[in-house]
Length: 253
Image (cartoon, rainbow, N blue to C red):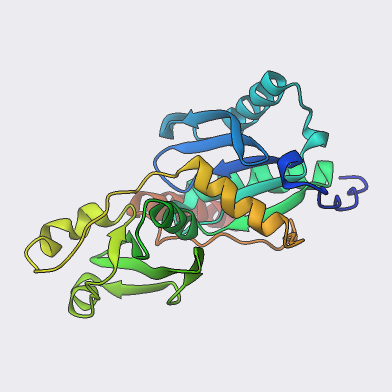
């Protein structure tokens, strides 16, 4: 691969920071450029185009649009899930490659934190983010505001839908891609608040990226791992077919 550049120093001013944002955990991908606290370019990649081969041209177009080069980036922030197995691999692979090529700081950010940050900015002091983990289970994590800063009130966990309902704290609004799964059940329970916010907000993502950048953080491109949701049956069947093919070929040699 050649010599990996040294990790760049943190810029002296937040207003001068150039950040690439990649979030591919959901049904569509968000690719954006931030200059300071402002989003200066963005693209949405629908599920059919959420591939590494589509990601690179989108990034190149945005850089050209802003008159930047990849080597100008101070940081590359990537959503690490929980989310789609395939989507997360695409985003993380792109982020790792660029970070190793440019020396830009790699910032892995929880997708649940991004969603919770947006809810906090919308005025919700306490929110629980949920996502469908399939097989009647959900991923859940609670967040709250502490002096206007997002803090995690619980660890990310996977629970059955029934267990989640039984232990539901109605003081927390709920948000995230799993809302549609539980909404018909929660509407019947008095006091529950449902906040629809399953899509990634670019400004909230950028805010978290800048906070991490100016704490002088940088993830290792070789060790940063995504938080996978349980894989879909189609993905499991595909991997099984590939594994069976490899086994057949190895036995025939």
